[in-house]
Image (tube, rainbow, N blue to C red):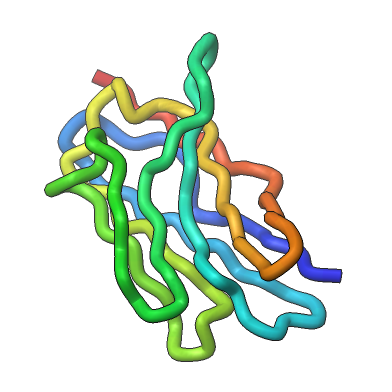
Length: 115
C-alpha cells in the first residue's frame, strides 16, 4: 500500500518562504503524476502545482511565478518551494499521487501566513 507523508508546513510571515516535502512509501511502481493541492477554510480544494511523469509541470494561477514544484531522482518525493507568501496562501496543503488505477492523498500539512 502506498502512503504519502507531507512535511514542511508551518507559520511564515508575509513575503517569506516555505518548502513542503511529500515522500511516498510502500510498493511504488510509478506515478503518472504528483502534485500539491490546497484547501482554505470555506473554499474548495484547488490545484497548486503538479509534475507529470515526464517532468512537465503545471501551476495554478495563484502559484505562478512564486511557487516551484520539483522531485527527487527516484520520483518518489516531490517538493514545493513557496516564495513571496501572502496571507491568502494560508491553507492545508495536500500531496496527491496519481497511479494507473487510483489517486492517493496525503494527510495534509497546515501553512499559515501572517501579515
